[in-house]
Amino acid sequence: MPKVRSVFLSDIHLGTRACQAERLLEFLREHPAERTYLIGDIIDFWAMSRSICWSQAQNTVVQKLLRRARHGERVVFIPGNHDEALREYCGIVFGDVEVVDEIVHETVDGRRFLLIHGDQFDQVTCHHRWVAILGDKAYDLLVRTNHWLSWGRRKLGIPGYWSLAGYAKRKVKTALNFIFDFEESAIHHARERGLDGVICGHIHWATIRDIGGLTYVNCGDWVDSCTAIVEHPDGRLELVRWGEPAAPALPVAPVDVPLAARIEETQEA
Image (cartoon, rainbow, N blue to C red; front, side, top):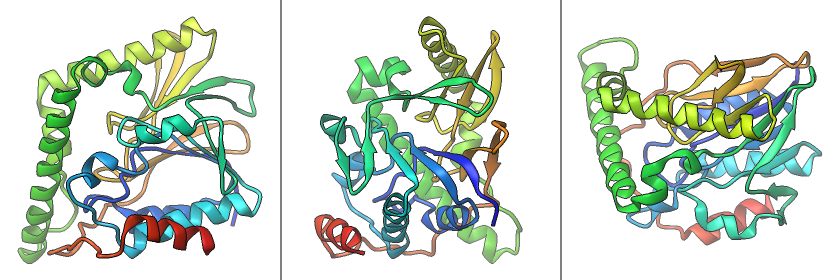
């Protein structure tokens, strides 16, 4: 199986019902890499403070990433706002996984990209945390509603996957304005540092595009769109949309095994 040079993932949101862990495992199996960058919101501590849903597939995702690190692949974890509690461990290596606040990645063709989660460019998250938490709960409600809609579509024999949250983002003008402002802020930050672009996550809106001569890259997410960025051996960046995500079966009950035990079990694997 051909190996890509780098894989960039963000917004997996492990610990939630919405996490598309099965699809992510399929992607990881098909994309061995020299280095894997986990660009924030990998574990959703915000959602887990309300309830934990830690499936076997999610546990396997953690095992697979740790196994990659043990086998010599470089794995770098950049915490986001949903797993910001891990930011105090930046500069430390856990199980061969590097934890950093940000990092500059150089592609084969010499371009230098800032890798950062992106909540730093979100004025709501930075200055109005209660609004961000309220928005997170509203988004979670949309995702839960979407599970029921997907179940109904399957019962009616309607093919394909339709995302209610994605539809809302495309239709709400203020949401689109927020996305454009976020992208401009990220590129402005990269330009000030003399870099060629930025690779981030946070807004669940996957894209690769030129903004004022610099390259803006967003990994998307593994809740709604199931997207990732890969760097090929020639330095080319590609946005991969991993099929049509399948909604998890209903109902989904939280596991009764404490999270700490799951992580400990993972590290021993």
